[in-house]
Image 1 (tube, rainbow, N blue to C red):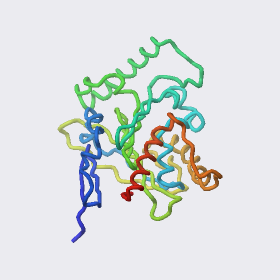
Image 2: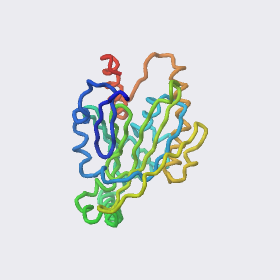
Image 3: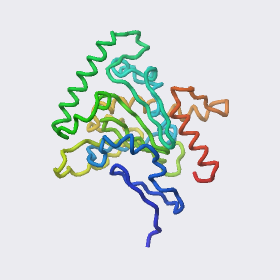
Image 4: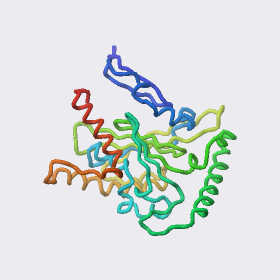
Amino acid sequence: HLREARTGTWGGFVFINPDPDCEPLEDFLGSLPQHYEKYEYEKKYKQMHVAKVVRANWKTNQEAFMEGYHIIATHPQLMVHGGDGANHQYDSFGNWSRAVTIAARSSAHRNIHPPSDEIFETRHKMANMMRETLRETIGDRVDKYCDAELIDGQYNNLFPNFHPWGSFSRIVYRFRPYGDDSDMSIMEVIYLAPWPEGQPKPPAAPIHWLGPDDPWTDAPEMGGLARVLNQDSYNLPKVQKGLKAKRDPYVYLAAYEEGKVRHFHHLYDQWVANGTG
């Protein structure tokens, strides 16, 4: 007989906690379900699932996906249409945090400032294109979403290691330790896609595993995201080594741009101090 564990569900995900005295999942999630209610995660299906072993601690690994501060140096191609950390909004809510990035807006670092009316017109056209594309799948339910909900990005994370992106992005990240090796971790990328209501969902995609020396582009099912993650993967082993080579005992974080990282470590320190981590 296996030892029992506390469980809870949200949005089609199952959460397992071995602590029999843990708080209910609903309390831990706080306001997160309300922010995601319109996106109907439980009606989606797992379209793609890739897991990669990375030469960096799981905390170091996920920090690379909690801020847009690094885009200007690591992903300069994204500055043309997606901006960078200079035009992201960061918010923290209890055990989760959010970053919002505005679509169809160039980075402020490129010193290109189109008229506001052109930006609004472009955004509206993009949203209408997305609206009609989604209509083929979810029908007229798409009409309840505003332009921002259809095209703007949200990369959110629930403490400690779960990153379900908001809006209509398919992306979900999860970060895990790699056995007992604190210099390694596992990063999982999952695509959750909408599906017509009332129709049988396709089988869930199997996990495609990549080793530490395999590029993300060895998983062509990821599309263009694989090339972006290759850029992050180039940095991460160097960041991990740098943390051990630094002279000062602290890491200095940007006051606002790395606010989500600060929020994570604030929660992490609380759990460790309370003996619950």
